[in-house]
Length: 262
Length: 255
Image (cartoon, rainbow over all chains, first blue to last red; front, top):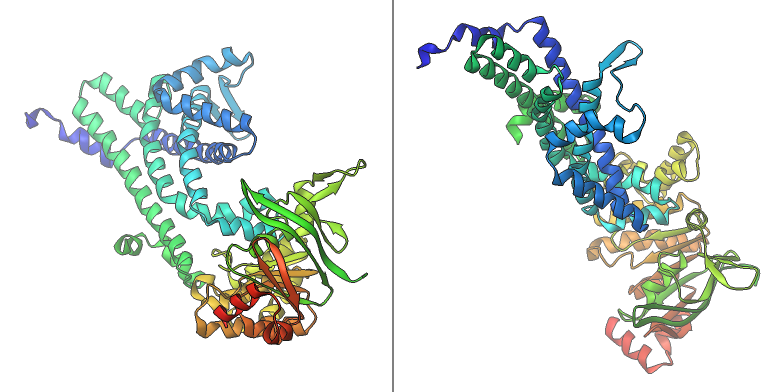
């Protein structure tokens, strides 16, 4: 059976990817990063709304999570990319988005929106758990010093909650990297689309899908190292270690030590 | 009467069906140090939390430097809760030191002290840092400016917390059982700092069980029980001739 696999093609897909593949890889990465950032922003906003005194805000936040966690991501991607303009009555997602030096395909814009909005619903609970984990005395102390709610959140509560949020956030980003593959369905040329097209031209499923699986594994593994480094850096200040600036940089940029100490 | 810093008039507070404060009135003059003593559940902590509007009061009024705390007087003489902004502004005048310190763990000792002066009072970082170092020196922590709270002992943390409230140059500092969470051997260093403050003329209201501190530093001692002030007087009065049976009982237990 194995003899039927053209290992040379697998090797080329892994070790000598072409220029088109690299463009697709870049696209996968920036889509995941932008969508995750969007998800965090939406998640923080929805979490603050969830904890608000005003019931309409709590209600809105509840509806948001209910819908976006309760329906399939693929349905949301299609709905937003194909349906948003019709639903809103204006062009939210253009055919091509020109932003100075860059221009983004409409499908990329729609895909990022869908992934980001979906992610926000999951991030809300993570952010809320993070904020809840901070001792109530912190808000007391901040307010007693004359801080208003917003300032206390921004300067005192959220920076501390970030430490609690970062480990699960890392897992979310790992998922996000893999979920970008769904965007091939609306015509985004990312690495899975590249593999899928390669396969349909050659009918070599093992070669092409093994190749792309390898690259997803590279992305998620690299991310694991980055995450470990970030967590280690955060843990150091939590333990009150008085690291020098140089030691901090070293700790953050030496994934192997971070890995070893986990 | 012009130098009254804090005045509470007939303050009532209830949590649901439980009435915690049943009409508390107290005047505190500028430079005075008041110790509030009393059994747990007597309402003393609730009372000082009302002074910086951490708790809303149900009736009565509290003023600091002549200004109503937490409420505005409507033209028709009814009281309405003040805006968040103006409550926050009033709190800059009222320091608070907590039982559990509540230092910001993600900031160094100096950053803890600088935080509110820079971000609330909008002082320059240089000025706030300079003043912060002076304050930390004053509480005996000149060598700990860059240390995170996690690396400080309880007594050191509480001294940073005192420096943090001093940095706002408040008219009044409230202490909520400042030594109750401390090991006995470090209680002294915190009380020493507080005594010094009292002698320098800071206006302080201290909820405490430390009768030694009351004897050394308090101008007046106030005994609370079951939501009311049952006795007040000089420390000597309390140590030599307390009048109320309840006070005698309480003192005999803690002395």
